Amino acid sequence: MADIAWTWIGIRASGVTAWGLLTAVVLWGILLRTRVLGKAASPTRLLDLHRWLGVTALAFLALHMLLLLFDPFLTFSVAQVLVPGLSAYEPLAVALGVVAFWFLIPVSIIGRIRSRMAGSGARLFQRSHWLAYAAWPLATAHYVLAGTDALTEWSIGVLIAGSGLLVMGLLARGFIPAPGPTRAAGSVVIRS
Ligand code: HEM
Picture (cartoon, rainbow, N blue to C red):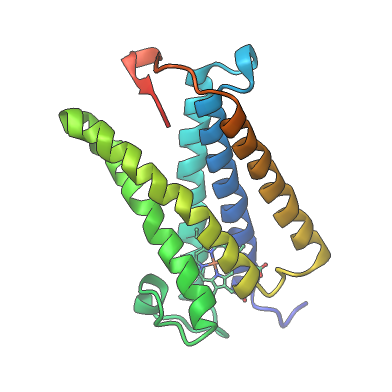
């Protein structure tokens, strides 16, 4: 244990946490859209949690990427962390993670500035959500292909539990019609 780099443990722990949070963000987005929980969860509370999970997922992802710069074994440069295909270590698997990261950026930026963009802000925000949803399969493929621990029993359990919940949420989205737009606190129209 003494000769295992702390950065390596940190990279794996932050990666799995970021994946779990990303899965939860998508799930909360689906719950917000379908209102499958009915009165058990108000749209405003679901939206708050959806936002909080998104910010926390990005924070763990930033940590995951930052630690790679300090790892003595993997030795990543800033360019290798940010540009898909430059990694010498598992180039394809890592590129999937880098693309997933970039897919998450527009939704978080547009989310902050959309109130200043009038009508086009809401449209752009909705479109950028599709990129964020697309980040999930990419991040999952990255997890499975790049992770040292990805195919251990506990990790397969995590992957099955997270993916299973999402599949159930998507089925609910398919079968339960979405309610009309709802006005929440601050007159935000909730449509994820
Ligand atoms: C949404 C984006 C991302 C998520 C959810 C994510 C998540 C993960 C997970 C869960 C692992 C497996 C940990 C393990 O069990 O061993 C992993 C490994 C790895 N990730 Fe990411 N990652 C993302 C983006 C990135 C980015 C942008 C980079 C930049 C280069 C990166 C580089 C790596 C590397 C090098 C590994 C292998 C670490 C090892 O196991 O030795 N990831 N990632």
